[in-house]
Length: 87
Image (tube, rainbow, N blue to C red; front, side, top):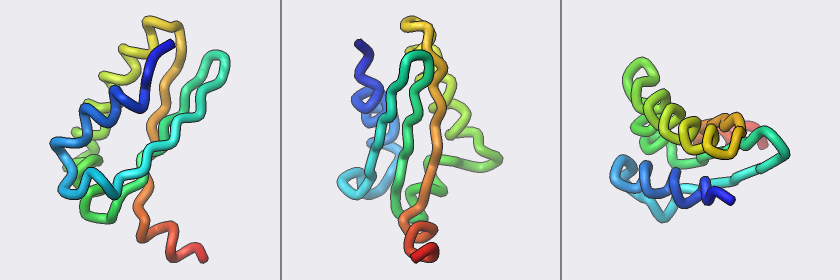
């Protein structure tokens, strides 16, 4: 079984400023994997990048990893600031 959390953490740690504050949640089902990456607003912006370039590159890497297990991998980026506004 693929360790998606470890793969994503290895990719995003050098990109974010505060890797300890990044939360990763992996929800794995039969054919789908949802990875939620929650970070501070600035780090979320870094992970998405200009025009979503970095987010797309991360998606590409994890989807290739998922293909080896015939799974569709979905990434969702969340900012802690967004979550606070909802309360």
